[in-house]
Amino acid sequence: MKCKKCGGVAVINMRHHRLALCADHYLDWFVNYTQRTIEKFRMFGPGDRLLVAVSGGKDSLALWDVLARLGYQADGLYIGLGIGGDDGYSAASQAKAQAFAEAHGLTLHVVDIKETYGESIPELARRTGRGRGKPCSVCGLVKRHVMNRVTLEGGYAALATGHNLDDEAAVLLQNTLRWQAGYLARQAPVLEATQPGLARKVKPLCRFYERETAAYALVRGIDYIYDECPHAVGATTIFYKELLNRLERRSPGAKHGFYLEFLRAKKKGQLLLPAETGEGLHPCERCGQPT
Ligand code: SF4
Ligand code: ZN
Image (cartoon, rainbow, N blue to C red; front, side):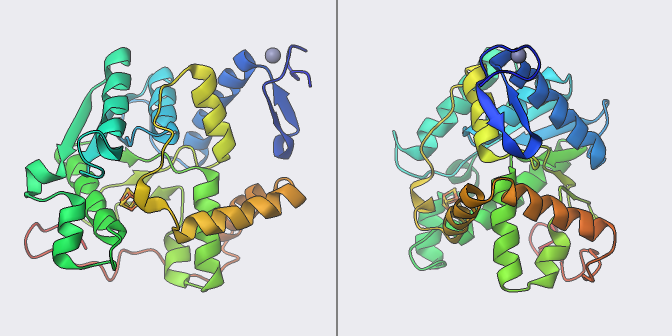
């Protein structure tokens, strides 16, 4: 397969774009396409300070790398969940995030949950008994709280997360199977700060397949953590991703169409969904954040 731009050896073929590219042209294309996504959804402007939620995985490090290459002022936020002990998942992913920040001269904020709140995520989950042995619901809640707080306290214009098209399509499938109109209304590349105390959230990689962000990270030589969190095993979204991958194998571009046509229809007002007002959120009695 040949690169469409220079005729060299292609490292990736993106059938939904009818585009095969060599390593150099792929890196250029990926950076430009991210900028086009930022502009298309009016995510932020050149002068805005951004906070990137960094997990040490390929998507968040690729996002941070691209934003830095585009010249945005983007700091990172790593949240230490305390999963897996001294040399387990959390310790290993933090090491990757810190090494990336140091190598690129970027600022990384680290919030260690145990140091800050007295208990790690697994300890908190055990004590509260939420989630029947899985710490994910507590973890999601705590992460959202910390990300929101650090974004607001740091005066950042937005919190950027590394969600890719596979993530978004899986959530869309999950919400559609249950016709969860409220969740469908809120699913978007930009979540506006609909009320005081709520940070703006953006997803600049939402138009890339997971294999495309992985290819970018590999070609750029980004050292990321390959392992998923051990608690992700058996997660519903992983099952939906597998279903969508089967669909994609049979009909290339299916995921792309499913997610982007949803956004297009929503924008055109073809879907009658409740307005996204942030209604139903109330300030927490302790910290004042909307919850
Ligand atoms: Fe937290 Fe791991 Fe569950 Fe993700 S899979 S929500 S990181 S505990
Ligand atoms: Zn080329």
